[in-house]
Every structure is written in structure tokens, then in C-alpha cells.
Length: 458
Image 1 (cartoon, rainbow, N blue to C red):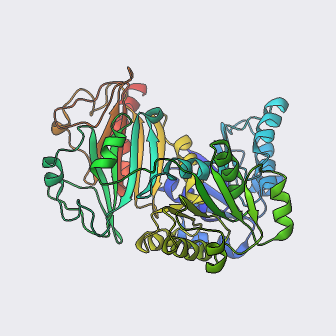
Image 2 (cartoon, rainbow, N blue to C red):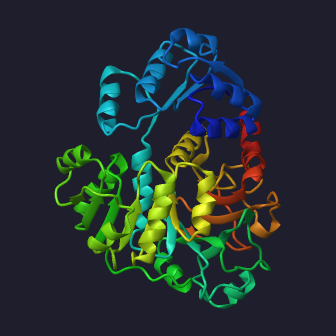
Image 3 (cartoon, helix red, strand yellow):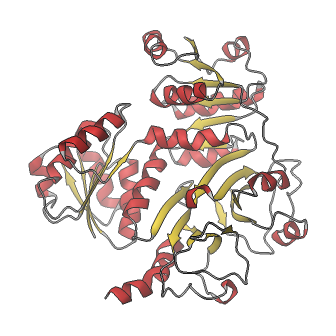
């Protein structure tokens, strides 16, 4: 597919890298000359210097021949203008735009009313909020990812000192009697990613991802030693930008008491008009005395959501030492994600990765339902619909040769049944199959899964 990407920031770069690796022809437009020079040395793509809001620039970039436009510049106005320009190009079949304004729903409605077709609008703040809310009452859990409409759950956790599972192999965990529909799907150990087999072992300091069905999630959490909080009553938020306000509003609706810390006094006044019961504190939420005075000890969660990655990480370390049960940091720089986890910050969220995941889920082959990227693109969870005729359909899993570095983690049947399959399980047409795979294995896995359907169409 010929794809035009407007915006060469980290999100645009990550999307381009993945699409190029999967055989797409990519052209990328960016208004920063130095950034263009950097991308030319990094990507096997055509790089065009100029504004994506310029008709001439997009024509020079080949918009007339492109089949898809992905607009992910830092400015909503440019992304919307690029999509408007693409409206006049009959070759463009799909348009995707990142929009960060809190008026995103108004823009969706306006585009529909005016007949401007945007196939996907990605709102990073909503994506991040959606990832944080489910884990606020789970101190030991980094994130929970839903598959198959929530029937399948994947949760991450640090294997900390004192965890009973530390030092246990996969075979030993299985002998300990876990819930039937549960499985350790991935292990992150320093810079290493492990798709575990029977002899692989969990070690202290690992970050493990465990897959389970929705029905057995609570049981699986208890098996791994995670004790959910009875209720999320008090939450501290540092940062009064859009994501902080959005989460405060959602927590208010849940009856949670929220304190939001913002250094800018004028910003505090604006926030006061947007929330109802949230206590707004005009102070530095990374200051120890400020947090002590605000009675942070025993808080259910502390969310550091400022624009400064370093401040967020430091604030979480401080809050954890002062007695917050759960800490979470917003991290934009992807190379900080591993650092944060090594420092014991269990939950990190990245707006850029959220944009990449949502975009790739749309761009990927037709049977791809969802894509979730872990850390710096090191591994993926991919939800695929099994087509009739695939080499993986109708055979027992033990008889299927998957690419090295990939496993079938879960299967959701069309009739509603969800399982974590074993060797004698069989994938059936129409099943939603959740694979866990190393990044470099993903193209092979997708090609193998869909190759027969492609031949049938031919």
C-alpha cells in the first residue's frame, strides 16, 4: 500500500518504521529540515520537507497516488487541513488524524455534518485515560489490556522481592495449580524479551505479562500474589493539562476524592471551571513537603501527568516512598519506559505509543482487530480473526509450527467462549486469536496467518 504520513515526530517515525517493515511504500512529510535529514538516514522512505497544510507540498509528496493519509503532526489544525486536502484526491481510500484538543467530539460531529470523511480520529489523552483507569485499584499491576471485547485480559506486573513466583519455572508454576485459563505470555528482563516456554524461569526484577479470561482474572491475580484494593477512594494527580483534567472528571464520576496539583495559578482557575469536587492545589506536586501537607500517605494512587518526563518519574519515586499505594507516570520519551520500570514505577503510559497502537490496528491487514506495543517496540500483542483456509485453522496447536518467538496466548470463540489454549486446542474459523510475539517475528506471523486467504482472493 502507498501511504503518506504527515508528521515526522516520534509517533510518525514509529508508524513509518513498522509500515515499511511490512512492505508498504511510505512517504513522510515534515516541516523541520533537520528532522527530515535525520529521517532520511533512518528510514527507507521518501522524505519531503514542507508543511503538511500546504497543497503544493502534499502534491510534491505524491498525495495523488497515495492510498492512505496518516496525519500525526504536533498541530491539530495541520492534521485536519491535510485530511481536508486529501478529500479532493480520489486515490485516498483512508484518512487518519491525531487530534489532541479537548473538543475532539465536537470535531467528530462537525466532520460528519459537513461530509468530511475521517476514518479514524485518534485522541491520545482518551487512550491514556483508558489505560490508567482499570489499574488504579491494583497496586502491583502495571497495565491491563483488553482483547475480544474484554473477554480476554492481559496484565503486567513486576516480580519483586518476596514474590512467591520468583525463581519458579513455567513448569513449576503450572504444577502450583493456576487457574486453567491463564498463562505467562511475556517476560521483560532488562533489555531482553522472552516469550517463555516450560523451562524458562521468572526472576526478581522481571516484568511479566500474564493472560487470563475475564471470568478468571481475579483468581489469576490472587494466584500471582496481587491483592486488589477494596475501593479507590483517594487519588493525587500532578499536572493540570488535558489528561489530568480528563482523569479527574472520570474519577469524580466514580465517587473518588481527587487532589490535583498545578503550578500555574491561572491554569488552576481554568481547571476549577471544568471539575466539580476535585481539590485543586496551586503548588509543585513534586515537592516532598507539599505532598506531606496534602496527606499523601495511604493515597490509593498518585498519577504524575505533567509534560516533563523527568519530573514525572521523580515525583512517582517520591510518592511511593511517602506511602502512596499506586504510582503511575506519563512518559513521552520511549527510552525512559524501561528506566522507569527498573526504578520500580510499575505503571507508565505513553501518548505516542497509544497513537501508534490505534493507528496500526486500523492500517494492518483486514483481519487484525487490535495491536498493542510493549516498551520500545520490542514485543506486540496482536488480535487476529482466523480466516477459513488458514494453515493454523483446524489443527491442534501442538501440530502447528509458529515462528520462533511467537505463541498463541488466548482464543475467543464467536459464540462467546474464551480460553487460554493448550496443545490439544484447535483454532476454528472466525475465532479471535491473540498472539504474543517478538517485534521482528510479527511480519512473518501475519503473513503465515493470512497467506491462504490471500491466495483464495487471487
